[in-house]
Image 1 (tube, rainbow, N blue to C red):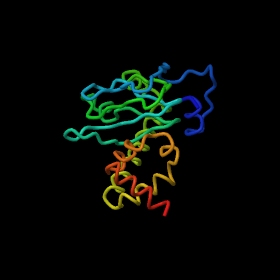
Image 2: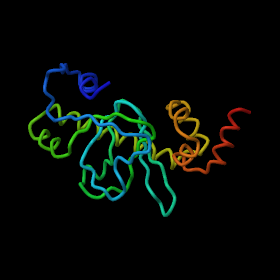
Image 3: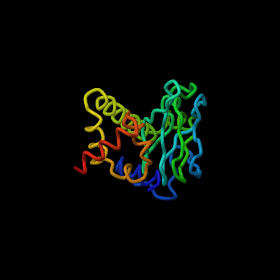
Image 4: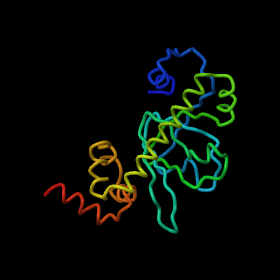
Amino acid sequence: MNIREYINIKLSTDFKDNDELPFKITKKNFKKGDVITAYGQIERSGYFLLSGLIEIAMLKDIDEKIIDFFLPPCFFCSYTSFLSQQPSDVQVSALSDAEVEVLDYLELQKAYKTSLIANQIGRMATESIFMISTQREKDFLTKSAQERYDELLSRRPDIIKLVPVNKIAKYLGIHPESLSRLRENLLS
């Protein structure tokens, strides 16, 4: 699904292939391991994931913490850097080969001034990121590691299949050994 199809579904519009979107879109490919947005870089693009697996991580002291994983179809970027145009405190990386559609920050800002569709899609992306972030924060404050793992299994089983165990452990905020014990608990 591309951004045009996504907009049609989410906003109940009917953009045809030859209809012009209110902002320019370009396609880009990333290889597995590519850093899309580095720590300290100002995020100048928003991305719509067509294929692949994306990770957003941050450093705490010398430890990497994984904020989230993204699978298509969805928007992603170093969102706080994108909104504030300040250096990123996270790193966005491709965990597999990925194809994206790219939205330029300045183009999007221009479109916000004249386009209802641009404003709707911006609001929808912001609301989605807010809901994901808020739920994750609540989960860390109120649920055990076992409960977080169980929910990951039920809500996002594709992540369990595609992401290495050590990264899942970082995402859950536990050590890989602890994740092994949680997995053993499910089998017994």
